[in-house]
Amino acid sequence: MQYLLFFLLPFSFAFGETVLKCVGSTTIQPIIEKVAKKYKQESGITLNISGGGSQHAVDYLISNKIEIGMVSRDLTNQEKNALSYITIGYDTLAFLVNSDNPLQNISKKDLIEIYTAEVKNWKKFNTKDEKIHLLSKRIDRGTLNIFEHYTGLFHPQNPKNSDKSKMIDTSAWEAGANNDMMVWVAGIPNSIGYISLGSVNAIKKHGLPIKILELDGVKPSRENIQNQSYPIKRELNLVFLKSNKQAAKFAEWMLEEYAQNSVEENLFLRAK
Picture 1 (cartoon, rainbow, N blue to C red):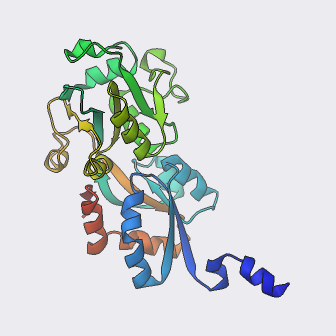
Picture 2 (tube, rainbow, N blue to C red):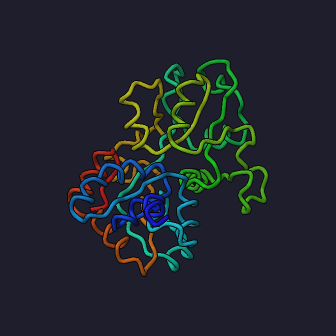
């Protein structure tokens, strides 16, 4: 029986391996996956990485189910008081259409009219006479939080949404992971969506038929994000409990040169 129990135990426990569970934003996930091998070589610590969304990360961390949360939005004051965090980089939102759509630019006003379904057809933008297919994000996602903050619109289930004129239309398909959004935009010619710029740049290399729109005439380039001419910028945060020294050590390591290079290689802006 003792022999059997030994092999039923988790590998990390049986062999004394230290594992940090790192859960949350699928925007940040590829950055951590890229550095995990190097960090294990230096520290002997394994990072167990999975997605689930920014709010999922915060909830699991507070429930002590994980060691590190990945949160791709600014933290609330309440979260800052309850948790420790380190900002490892910066990102922005990119607004996407299918490559077959001739549209090149969109305004904030346009986005509000489209996502409230005040405008339902692409012919308003002198492109084509087709119904607009809305793509948005699930309520637990940091990307949605940034979209809400920029547009002033709200998810239908957001408790702050008492003004129905500011509600994202319920016809919108809601993506979880970033890959879902990109596959939908690529496969639905009349769709529009939004996603992390770093994520879409990485996937575009594989040939998906998607196009990044200018926002009010400004491209979401690294230079324009840094000089703030592109109007959206969001933090990429690692959060952890104040008492967890191993998690804090990894988060601090993410500010070192190798890790910051990984942030940049994943097409995000460095924190330092």
